[in-house]
Amino acid sequence: MGEQKRASDAIADSASAGKLKSEAYFQEKDLWGFIHRSFTKSMGYTEEDIRKPVIGICNTFSELNKCHSHFNELVDYVKRGVWQAGGVPMEFPTISIGEPYVKPTTMLLRNLMAMDTEEMMKAHPIDGVVLIGGCDKTVPAQLMAAASANIPAIVLTGGPMLNGRLGGRSLGACTDCYGFTLEHKAGNITDEELAVAENAICRSDGHCMVMGTASTMASIAEAIGMALPGCAAIPAPDSRRRHMSENTGKQIVELVRHNIRPRDIMTREAIENAITVTMASGGSTNAIIHLVAISQRLGMKLPLETFDAISAKTPFILNLRPSGQYQMEEYFEAGGVPALMKELEPLLHGECLTVTGRTVSENLQHARTYLRDVIRTMEEPLDSQGGIAVLRGNLAPDGALIKQTAVSAHLKKHTGRAVVFESPADLNARIDDPELDVDENSVLVLKNAGPKGAPAMPEIGQIPIPQKLLKKGVRDMVRISDARISGTSYGALIVHAAPEAAVGGTLALVRDGDEIELDIAERRLVLRVSDEELAERRKSWKPPEPHYDRGYGLLFHERVLQANLGCDFDFLLPPELRKEYKERI
Ligand code: FES
Ligand code: MG
Image (cartoon, rainbow, N blue to C red; front, side):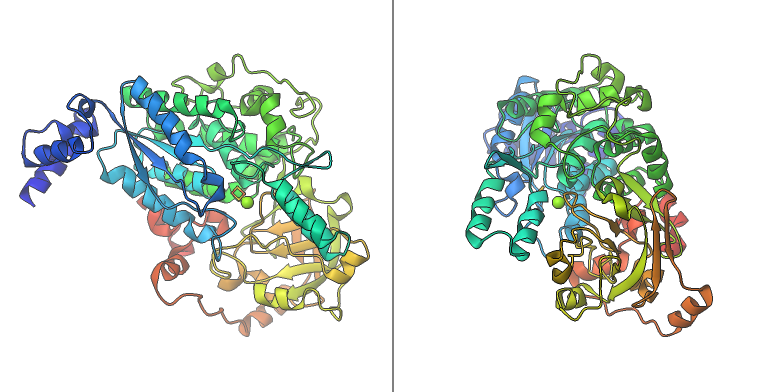
């Protein structure tokens, strides 16, 4: 114990003396120095090796996470880079979260992964770390961890899948997953045709290849300065991702040498750059929750109004599905995130430092667009505004989101009568009931699908169109919930309504037949029910039973913040922010 204390004192001293953390483990002549050297050498590292900066490589390979199935190969290339630059790589695991399998939803585990990653970074003799992520929640979890641990770090994303191909058409996961199952449900395609589509859509390693959450978060890692330029869009199986992996390994050693840390890079201006790129890309609504969480880890509040203000002045210029036409493979060919950022340069903070050791503007010097139909100019955008609008009104006093670029034109301003589902289970039970009193002008409302309600705010905000309307050819309706949506979904989907129904938000008080008004241009979402009537209804409202009575689920239930505060756990915020938010926790 005494020696243990001496070792940790030495580690703390080394940090203040500007020495590497690993030196305190491997250079001390005391008992713990002896043990550290001896145990490390037993793994084949030599005396010379343990004098180099130690680079942790966070490998989130898992056969339970398809999007990370190729990570072992990427790690080999990262290691090559680390050795070449004079570091010593040490690979370590954390939990890995893949969208398709994890129940009830990956969002339940994002904070757990962030905690796992942060504690692994802090507890070991790691001077710098390469964080390898890909699937939706993994990159945000790793960025949250990097923000809190604040040791030199660089993100390497695993890259998107190649385009699915079928009958001369490009297919995208999972935008076309919805399309195929919808048409199958409507009786327009056979079981056999569905099976052919299943096999054609995902045909390589990598994450979803539309501008869904994974592609959005990979773009954000790059735009915020934490990944090397060009990293986000290289398809997973492309040889250039191997080169990128090797270069990332080299660069982390440089970051350690120059002591460049995540908080030197992820400043408020860098976060604004990430928001600008998200808005110009038609990026996922999930990015808002994640960026708020990352920003709060850095001690900065990030109100939803910031997103709306940036969205309003940022043209939508990236022609990628689900809002546009192409997919990540074409984005890569068009020049990727650097080309997009070059177009957006007048809107960006060019002075921000990045993991290259250079500024955003310096990185963009030679960037150019190779396919003009994929990356438009700001003068000829796809839309004059960014993808995501923040709605306010009595139905969502703390805000709600809509991905306006994916809304059918006739629904951008709409008033209709509510058809209410009390919970996800109620929705599943009744949505296809032929007796359901619903038409194409109705507004579908789903309650109790928020952070505490569902639990963990699953991606079920894409409330299905009732089958009887599908058969009549209806493909879009206004739908409102406190859930999230997949970044690959489309339609008039109002999500993240805050406060959520399970904590008594107005959403909890909506009844069948109430009139609801949506006006995207005016950013309005109004329940046309008087305050007196709402107060009356509130008297009989009771919170639903929590989903857990023990374990991590209970911790999540008790400590998760609302969507507009990033769904982080209150105790993971810096103390100053925790104090400020006190009454909202
Ligand atoms: Fe991993 Fe879509 S399932 S990104
Ligand atoms: Mg997704």
